[in-house]
Image 1: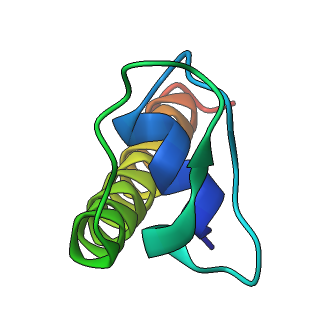
Image 2: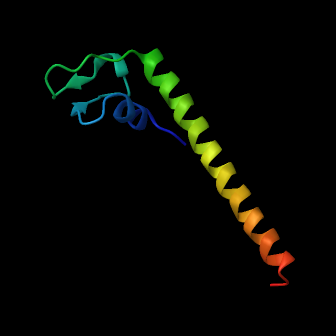
Length: 76
């Protein structure tokens, strides 16, 4: 499961920040010059990262199935 901090780190890599009470709108940005995020931006990134993770898992499963089929065809 993708968490808010995963999304924040994805959207603002190489930045340092502190968030209290899981409130994106009140993040304290330690790194200077960082554009603040909205809750909507973070939630959208969480959805995007979840889709990426699901797609990666599906591709991994498909690759494994393909490999198993090839081994089976070789009689292994």
